[in-house]
Structures are given as C-alpha cells and as structure tokens.
Amino acid sequence: MDQQTELAKVKARIRALAAKTVERGCSEAEAMAAAAKVGELLEVYGLSMGEVELREEACVQARLTVQGTARIALRWLFPSVLRFCECRGWTDGREDFVLYGLEPDVQMAEYLLRVIEGALGWEEARYRQSPAYRSNPLPGQAILRSFRYGFADRVAKRLDAMAEERQASVEARRAAAAAPTTGTALVLAKARKVEEGFRGLGIRLRTVTSTATVRDRGAWGHGAAAGGRVGLNRPVGADPGARRLK
Image (cartoon, rainbow, N blue to C red; front, side):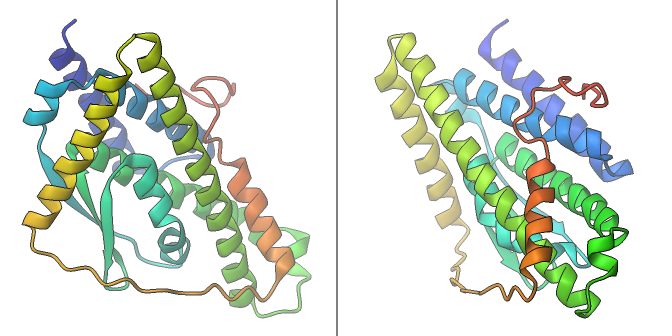
C-alpha cells in the first residue's frame, strides 16, 4: 500500500468516527475507545506523511457550536486539544470553537472535542445522583461549575502528557529508521504550512485571560477524578465494554 492510499484510509476512518458522534452521541465506552483511536490515527498520520503528501494536503477551517454548560469546560481545555491535534484555533462568541489546520488534524480535533463533551455530560449526570452532590449545601450551579473545572483541568493535563509522549514515540521511530533529520524537517514544514495558511486568512486574534473560581474543592476533586476516568490512554478494545470503532 502506498503512502497516498494509506493517508486516504486514515482520513476516511476519521470522517466515519466524526459522523458517528454527530449522529448519535457517544456512550462512556465509546468515548474511551474513540479517544485512544484519535491518538493512534494521529501517530499513523504523522509517521506516514511525506513531503509530497504534505504539499498536497489542504488546510481547512471548521466551526463547532457548543451550547449549554459544557462550553465552560471545553473552553478551559481547548488549548490542550489544539496542541494534541497540532491545529490552530480560537473561540468566536460564547458558543463557537473554530479550528484551522490540515484536514485530518482538524477532523480529529473536532471529534475529540465532541468525545470530551459527551464524556463530561455522562460524568456530570452521574455526579448529580451522588451523595456528595445531594448533601452539599452550596448552590447547585456553584458545585457543578467547580466539578467542570476539575474535569477540564485533568483532561487538559492528560492531553498535554499524551502529546509529549506521542512526539517522543514519533522521534524514536524516526531515529530507528535512520532518518531523524527528515522527520524533523517534516514537522517544521507542517507547522510552517499551517502558520502561512493561517496568516492568509487575515484574522487577528486577541488573547483573553480568564480565571477559574472554584468554590468547592470537593466538587473540583470529583470532577478531576471524572476526567481521569476518560480512557485517553487505553488501547482500543482493552476494556470488554469498549467496542472497536471502524
């Protein structure tokens, strides 16, 4: 199988994953398996893309609208998703997340955000039924906001660690193939192509800083534990309840 055919298969699988999420949401098991698959596909894509494929690959822009309380958590961990998927991105208004980069990377960032959104909804619903939530004297929204920040913080840290681990793995394989300089050159070329394409959009971004007000450290801890349960590092199929996503 040549590299072009392999890349086409990778992109087709990403599209299929994204379509499944948009159409019917995801269960906890699906979220675990899908997040691990995102990492696998990123690595396959990074290892197989050569100079010719990089020149031919198009940069695309995608917009995700996230309504409801999940957007608080997603805004907090959005930069980590961008680093993990090697994309540029920004928020537009209160509900829209905008992604820019090579098409497979943007597709995977979009899918991963939906996976995290679904996992947060599932975990939050479960937390609402717990004694820790029901016996808490604070207002419900204050408790849940602290929970969401804890969830987002934990997932963001795990994504950052996974990005570092993946990069180390990629560099090790390239070194073993006796072509580390070529691999490094491709990484730089990819980053340069995305940056040049972004400049061509003529968009000027403004950095906005924000702080998280955590009124309940206990709720934050429960959220962090929930973020730790999202099986981002679990190999696909390792959990008996996690179906393979094809």
